[in-house]
Amino acid sequence: MVGSHPLGIEGYKTIAYEIAEQADGHLPDWCVLPVCYGDALAGVAAGFHDLRSRGKIARVPRLVAAEVHGSLSKALENGFDRIEEQEPSFETIALSIGTTRSAYQAVQALRETGGHAVCVSNEQLIRMQKTLAAREGLFVELASVAPLVAIQELRDRQIITPGDRVVAVVTATGLKDLDISANPAATQAPFENVEAAWQWATGRHGAAPAAA
Image (tube, rainbow, N blue to C red; front, side, top):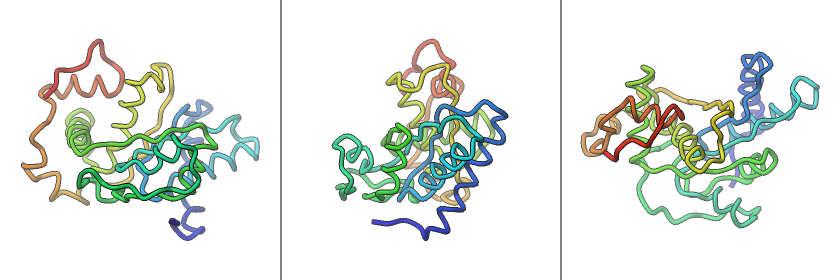
């Protein structure tokens, strides 16, 4: 399995350049992206490596892939170079990252940066999309909130710590899959307390919110 044309991946390097430029000397510890075949992930990794080789940054942030069916998680867990096809256990609503097998370029980027892969569920995506819209006024596609779900998961596992600086790359508007977001059958389990949900997702909390 391969991803984009190499020139397309070269274009994604500019995401790393912009993150470094806007960090103003405070480079993030983590950079989290929604991942299908890993084109953007590989490009961002290459961009950070370019900057380090030119002496523009001292280190490369650790990268995280927010995925659906777990092919990267399995590869990292088992030390595989070959990314294996996964049997989907559900039909994802994150259409743009719904592949059952990612690409070697993605797992390579994660390994080179000491990163992680995190699986996300439909319920988590719906909840986080609603929370982001209510708390920050941002309406993004369901796949684009996958990085926020992954951050929450890694915080719960104490892999991302309260003092870490984290960038979530949000890739597209919610108008791309408005028909899914607006489907009542797909949105039966929102958080009852949106503010509490956002505090929990971003680490500004004292205790976990009650289950919806």
